[in-house]
Image (cartoon, rainbow, N blue to C red; front, side, top):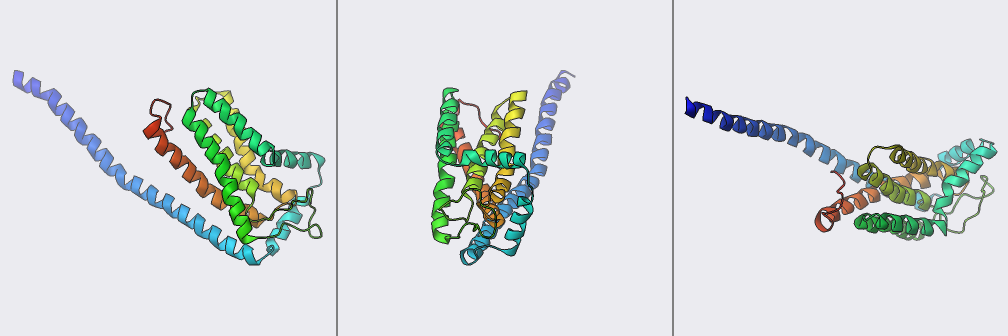
Length: 250
């Protein structure tokens, strides 16, 4: 009798281990499926960007670009114009350099050193890639005789530098806020603020007559891929060199 009772805990532990093994085995195909889908989406985004970049090299703008710009600019509202200018403001110099420095110093002062380093990467990588692509593609910006241009810029148009910067930099900040901060009104406010900047920057660039919709689309495709690279690099370095700091969940 005593032997039988002594075997019961062992059996329970064995059964629990078997159940856990079955659960992990059952979920493995789902994880593999999600990984394949994720990789397919990344490859599709890069392929779509490559096709769009090739077309933009030989096409100043597409007919739908002009239609979208005119449709947006038909909104005659001083408030809407002010909002669009405010959305685009962080992406212009010198604030596009000052803000990342201030935010990086703030994050570093909180003891999150790897996060601070990666915010610098997220701020520098998009402009670097963007300048290389613009010099390669050399697509002209919207002309003043076609649409209303609220500020004439002397750089090339494809892809949108603002959109790439916002998706990579503010997107990475959104990721950090979502994964590292506890649920609070501050966390919610930051997520809404950063999400609004990312969601509306493309609209603002088109409305202000400084980019075509295809410039925005190309920047969104490439910016999304770069953001994934930045987040994966952050996770890779976090688990190897900064294990004593908070780790963003996988």
